[in-house]
Image 1 (cartoon, rainbow, N blue to C red):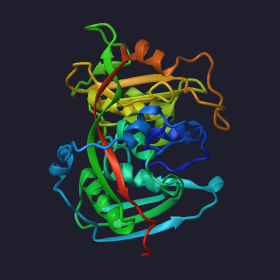
Image 2: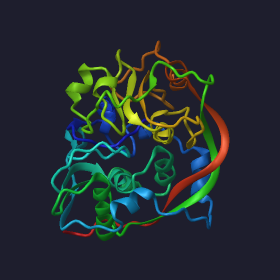
Image 3: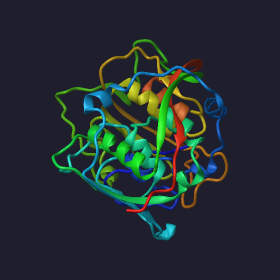
Image 4: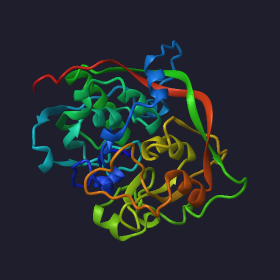
Length: 339
């Protein structure tokens, strides 16, 4: 499945190739209708475990429990064919962020995307959680406006969104460590990376702002991708998807791949490369679908698959393994309370 989270650009989405805007588009998915539930996700959702992981360090660093001063939640009933999605904050798991002066503003976004933002969910985690939520959490869209004094960080905004979701949607989630079938992300040939994956140089500054669609369409991903996250953008030819990232860790790259790798990445991915530091990434591939392609999108038959691009362009490969995965478990969620 190809999915990502909503960002600053305003995009008209019709379950087609609004993947052009992906750097920041939606979770749970753009092509959700072509997916079948992977076996590992079924096993994860059914399995019970008493193993409780520690609180994520990012939550501790951001200050623990925080709340907005005021908020508004409204169901969006716009006709889907005319709907646009918009957010003043990039809602992916990456760290790119332009401070907003304490304002959070998002329009026409599924509840699942707000949950993904609030809990900083990676591609490894969202597919396990997606199998547990009611259908309306994936399909019903909401407008959320909220404000707090000051100029909070992105992670502080995430904590405030957790509190908002608990208050307005009665959302309760907990985390567990589970042993699951996974892919280990490894270097294909020791000591050698592909041309699309290079160590990041601090001598080449990059913005933390994800940028506009026009910029993504007109410049190479390695020059316009924002620091701290993976962005989807147009391929060099129609029918392909490109990914760009700057100053990202291999751990972020690995855990993000299930969100981008469609049919081939049907398990969580764990970084086993042994590579430290941060990297710049650029890869391009033809998406694969379990059934017909979305309307208005014709996959390029001459483009590489995700697996081929991974090897040829990044010098990496996926090896089937088993491993411990930090997953989120849904305990409770309700239709929103009125304002």
